[in-house]
Image (cartoon, rainbow, N blue to C red):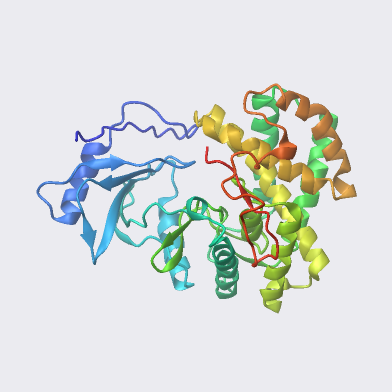
Length: 388
């Protein structure tokens, strides 16, 4: 098999790929040196993620300490390589499994990692294992939060919370839908975003993975393992839980989400609850999810328009569904809901990617309402979106 020659861009101005920077020979030379091999097996590229990292498996069986290895190129100008190493070490000390780093060159962006295989949580869920897997994933959040008593991470502060939500008004509304936000509309959005940010800031703060969902949780022989954690921050205790239960790729009906939320609450120690009772925790959870999903609408639009990752557009209807279904519960957000439905939904309906958001996540599901059993949450209606 001929070795791939892959070109990646490092553009500090817009963080988008350039052409004709071939890193493969340097990566192969580095791997030969690290593995003490005269001849290196072919590198087989794997599918990427939302970032610019590139993953490779070896055509031959390359192992260290009995574990399979994989190579990674993470362009140092656009990827958080130092953070990846630091957070990996931190999560390991907190008892979470991450891919072991066997070798690294941060300057070039080269890594030799433990290969955890191809079993993402999203891929293996079935009616027989969904209760155990989501129960373990929920408990792992609590375990990490209990251990992370002192912050060594960037703060999920007001500036960052608002900067993330601003992606909605920068990418999703004007660039994807073609609607220019008026001054009055911007005032309304600012007021909405302030409410959501204030709610987040009032919670207890602990380590936040920041992308704790079914495609970043993997299964290996020893249980759950975490990947894509380099963006971790010191943030609100509800963030990773809402990322899991209102996953942009997995549909949980509302009743199921709230049942799972109550189970999680009952397992939480007092120090993680802070001053909140359960109704307050439920509202904080809902509003944290809104902050995340408003941000994601902007991020998915940017991935499609700037980075040519069109598949993310197919996930927008489910994100819209979660956004509107949750916001409709709160009088404080009524103006936002009305504006979204009257101004934005008609523009969404003109897009090729759009499907009725009220059914989003239900078509192509490989766990049905009839087949899934969820004793973890006391319901039987988990649905998964078809992988895009």
